[in-house]
Image (cartoon, rainbow, N blue to C red; front, side, top):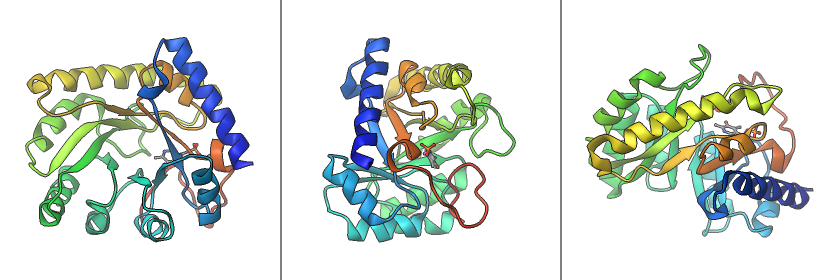
Amino acid sequence: MIKENLRIVEENIQKACDKAGRDRGEVTLIAVSKTKPVEDLMEAYDAGIRVFGENKVQELCDKMEKMPDDIHWHMIGHLQKNKVKYIVGRVDLIHGVDNEELAKEINKRAEKAGVVQDILIEVNIAEEETKFGIAPDKVEDFYVNISKLPYVNVRGLMCIAPNVDDEEKNRRHFVNLHKIFVDIMNIMGNNNRVDIMSMGMTGDYRVAIEEGATMVRVGTGIFGARNYQGGFTGHGNDE
Ligand SMILES: *Cc1c(COP(=O)(O)O)cnc(C)c1O
């Protein structure tokens, strides 16, 4: 089933790229495997997937140990400061950075580990009260501030659009994220490498790609529905 799902997702990505006149190579598919067993991840791996996204540090580290070494891991969930030390230098990208304390902690741990950690700024693009992320009008200032940290490399932006029945409803949010992305690319003549826009999930990755996403994070569309014990508030939260 996972293999067939991946074929469909791949087909949709290609169609969205064609529609937008984009090259398929511009878009990275992140297979969001949270809550799923290693066997499922291996099925995706055997079908060619090498980029996985998880939203809990413990689960991420467990799976990292059990899976092959050529995988690129992404931390896509909200990250607690005290858990930064477990993943810095081990994940390719930390998607959900939305406060200075967290950025400073990543910087500190990266220096200790002798690496420069790639991160994304999470933007609360629809200004939802329940969501994490920097307010759209505060992103530029936040970017300028954390860009000064020498062991952190801000590669771009990430957003979680609202949960909607029709993905067209999220198009304007993706358009808005793209505008902010262009703005921060132009700050400081883009001395830093700002080149990633992580937006689009199972319900809206096609539209996100049409509006310029360079990374899409697809979970349910690949692995099927998730079973949660306890409350699930809509997106990743490392509590
Ligand atoms: C769970 C999750 C996804 C994947 O969601 P699906 O709707 O299952 O594709 C993407 N991004 C983040 C941050 C998530 O927590």
